[in-house]
Length: 182
Image 1: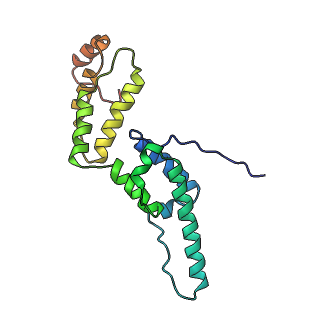
Image 2: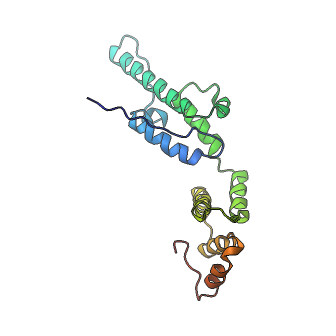
Image 3: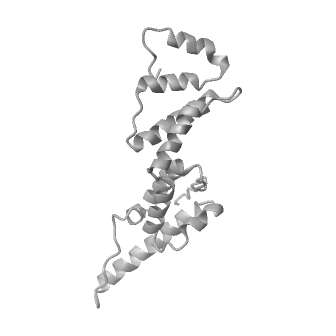
């Protein structure tokens, strides 16, 4: 007896594209439709009177419809208007990527601003703060923007609230700044 595994993905919203994309790709790989979504497997060209090609086209279309519905069902209703008019799962995926994974100057400026101005508030979990900081650094890295490790360490130290003043002072008084991993 085969067991049914239900996969729950947080619907795509304006702030969770990076994690949503990873989970959605995994789901599409699991359902054997990722190659259609990423464009690796194109729809076979029609050949008049060739039953094998007709069967391959039908199979591709079924996989594409399934993938498209899986993606749509994992998108928040408020974001659905963005994909209106996408006819294939590949077109839908590319549209979402263009919207949420922009590498233009505005996106770069926004991430750099977030990195430099973000401050941890009193009572905020340090793990959440660190996760957000390093997530922003990773997004900049994906756009080929590498920030000097010493500068990142200083930015991280000064993003901490006043309660961390002793830690910050002791870190700065060392012969060398601690690495980000430390």
